[in-house]
Length: 170
Image 1 (cartoon, rainbow, N blue to C red):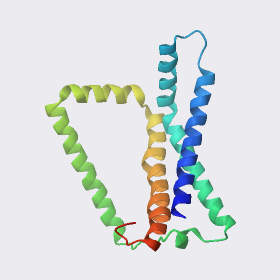
Image 2: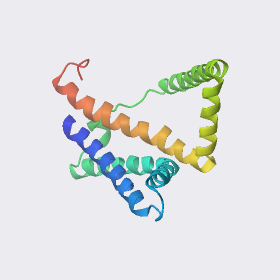
Image 3: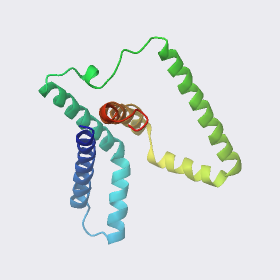
């Protein structure tokens, strides 16, 4: 079961990524040199990468829901998910804020000791993201991807492996 879920996860990601790459190859404007074609395709990929990630997340979630609906199983118990204690939510919030503070501190060290690296990073971020992209990134990269990874890896794959292996091995 763990291998099946992992295969589904990888297959969906690969099919969508290759499908988008094929679309980019077919949509590349005519009259460009090979280097210009690659540059155009890379620019399009980075421009639409968040949407691509969101599509992958939604497809995986739909497959997961369809899988359990077809088997007439409830999702939560099958994934080994238990009801969250209310006391855990403030702890998670404090931990998230703490990690954000640690990351901000590390970024300030990079700014202080490697200003060229930080300047290049800031230029890349300014050129790549606007507010629309930020919202897509938040949906895809901050909400969607972690949710899908938790469901597939922690609950489906590791959960199934823990049925036949010790917990540390799973």
